[in-house]
Structures are given as structure tokens and as C-alpha cells.
Length: 167
Image (cartoon, rainbow, N blue to C red; front, top):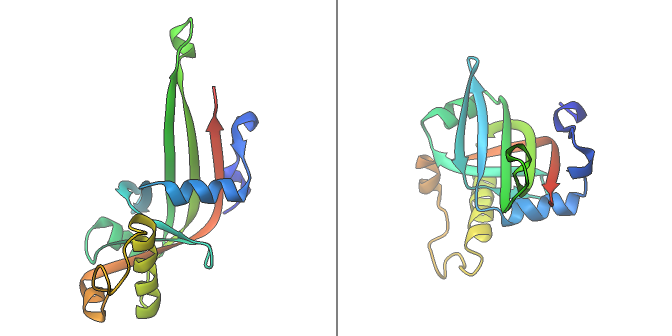
């Protein structure tokens, strides 16, 4: 995978700054995860957490269903994260638009089998979405029993790109 997938047609909107991309991933509540099996694309809105140490994105969910089945094969995946801004008015209908910021991530999705890594992935999700809460203080931390019913998925990032339309 590589540059051709993340090439932005409108260079005036392209964002290559890694800090900008990470900041958008960190503040986004969810993204749309795309996988494919037997030639059939499948998209689903998922919460996620970016791990800068592994340069990977963690998700969680049931140990059954399409996302889990697609992750079992370690196949290619895509995550789209965006923020919508104000509507842009114009004289002509074809020139109306919207301001936005977006990140597209390409990689491979797999199931995390290592219990320590799975717990860490779940903790990254908790820290992102509930930063004010502390494990074993405000809630019971993830146990090995929890991991028997909850799947942790990791998307190893191959490439990403950012894009912003300001006006």
C-alpha cells in the first residue's frame, strides 16, 4: 500500500502534517471502518483509539459478526474520520459546499490475541472517550473473563492522509 491510495487530488486541501492528522483522530468520537470479504465491501461506524507507540488503531466489539469475521482474515481495511464545518453558500447550486476536515487511514485489520495487548487496547479506548475516569477507581478494569466475550481489533496503519476544505 502506499502513496497512491493517499494521494489527494486537490493539493490545496491536502494535509500532510502528522500532528494535524493525529489530533483529528484523537478528538473524533467515531469513524467509519470499511472491510471487504469475498468482494463485498462492508462499512460500520465504530469508536476507536489511535496508539502512537504501535502506529495502529484499536477497536472493540463482539466475537462474532461481519467485522470480526473480516478481521479474522487479516485483510485490508480503511478508516474514514471527518468533521463537518459550516455550509458554503454560492450564487450557483453547483458551487454550494461544506467546510470539512478529514483523515483517511489504510491498513490491515487483525484480532488481538495477546491478553496484555488487548487490555491495553481497551484501556486506550477508555482513556480516549472517558479521560476523567480511572480503572479500578471509577470502573472495574478489563479482566481475562471480559476478553472471552469482547474482541479487540487492531488496524496496523500502512498509510494515511488528511484533507481540509476551509471555504
